[in-house]
Length: 176
Image (cartoon, rainbow, N blue to C red; front, side, top):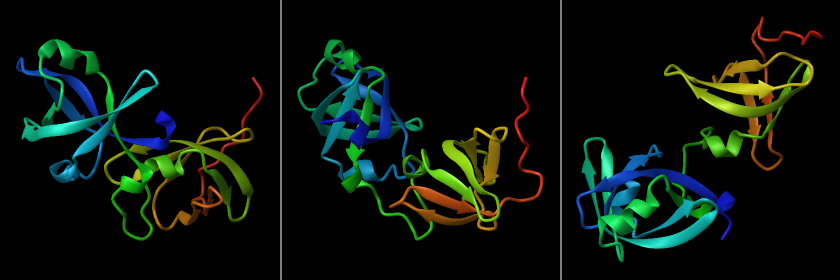
């Protein structure tokens, strides 16, 4: 199984107790998914293994997970910094017009008037709204607010995004 096909939903940050329980930092907006999750794919250094969840509890903003077959602290510590993943078909459906970040990264971004701007390389979470980082060969790094007035169309099939930039967002690169 290719780890690129997987979506991270948690990261093992350490152990808890001596019976093989691990501490998991949530990387999902849907922590309730762990209530019914029976199996999870663990990825670590390009290796992927499927483990069965024996028990799962909330603890101080993290999860404590006990996997079947991992029964000691010595076994559990081997999974430190490993990621818990699900496949794309196990994702929670989002409302119309909402997207997972991994679906947007790598998209080609076009302005309705100017044309091709560059590629979406990162998403900054600012609190008020996300900000899309666009790398361009022509313009300085472009920061686009993820608001309806700017983001006009997202096409997951063609991996393109149409935007209408607000005044002052573009600056042409200068030779150094």
